[in-house]
Image 1: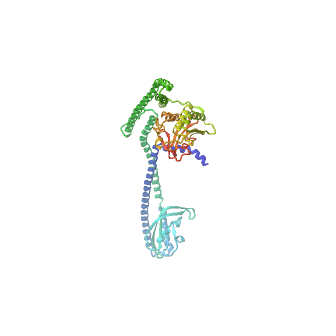
Image 2: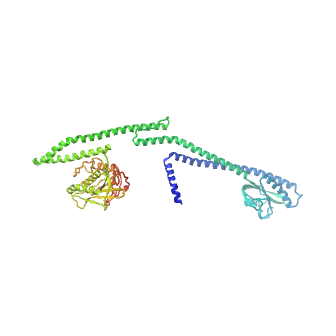
Image 3: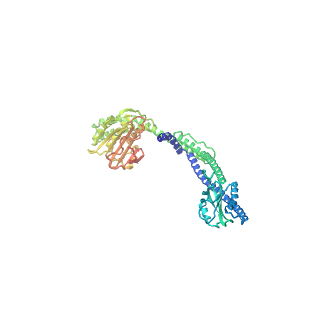
Length: 559
């Protein structure tokens, strides 16, 4: 039952929480209402208490004055009857009956208790009192005050309990009870008269005042909410407009501007925002023009160099083929010329590829392929280099084929760069260490890792591993004749697939590169089937590179 109720309410709760998080106007109005409610409640409570205290004090003064008048009249009547009436009961009735009759007309009750000094309570009987009044209305504390004769008039608050017929259901209401003593001439003993005045009128007045205050407080809170909403709207609306314009600017619509109205702080902010947008637009256009000129220069130079390079290649091939007829120095020069021309051609090819990435002209051609075949081709092609360096290359295939929708040409280029780099940096002529290539897949992603046990990557070097033309050791000779653009192009190829190309490294423990690609073209990666940190790593303090310039601690990288 509760689960069904929560399932029905949870969407509304989520929408309310989202609105609360995103609307500064709602938070300001809510906080203002809460603070206003606290202040109004405190002020209202103080006012009600002051009104209640004033009403009670005024009622006490009136009651005491009326009791004094009644007691003076009662004593006068007793003095006039002194010596003529000797029947105590009759004199008591002659005293209290007129007072009870006047109390019935004026809305108060009367109790005659006594005589004093005989012990017992007025509830034990023998008391004269207004019909329907319950004697529990007389507090014990006030009764104890008049246990001895000669006590002055006293009063206190009490609950006046009455019964319709003397035995029916009791009703109670707050009231004031005043007690005063007098001496009855018939027996010379002291009796106590209790006057009980209800506070009904004061209660009604206090209720009326409370209702008026509550109504005024409610209206005041509504007005405060409306005023706060209007005031915050005047401030928040320009901020929202600025947010929308900023979003359009971030989306590339650099011509968007805010409307400037007036000369207040908001208008000045809008004017400054427009100036900033204009400056950013100008700088972005300058950078775009500079980038376009740079890309055009690289592309033009690469294309223009092909013609003279072809001529130089023909002359170099001719010299290289005839090197046996040259003296040793000239023969060596012909071999070096051939080798550098090969590297120069590879550099031109890489520069053209980089220029296509920079221009956004690179296009992905995905197809469903078996990555095991691509890995085998890459390892087979790199085997002569591994044999030359004395490095073993081991491929660990999973039991099931690893298939994915990828551009096989680009993936093969990525793996070729990773494997040749691993062979270049592996420990040469060490049969105990090998370059290990692993493959794995799951429902959403495929991953390939290339692990070597060579010099590794220092924490400071890891941030530059995917930079163009960067080398971990400039003095180190490249066996594979790389151009310095291989990892940069591999990174762009991985991003074009929507994948990751990450690196782990530690000095003296080698390095491991991990390529993670979505199994289906256009998919989103959330994890990788293979860990980035190798299991044989002695420590996980090494740097992790998730992309160019993006360095995070190893323990924060998701498997």
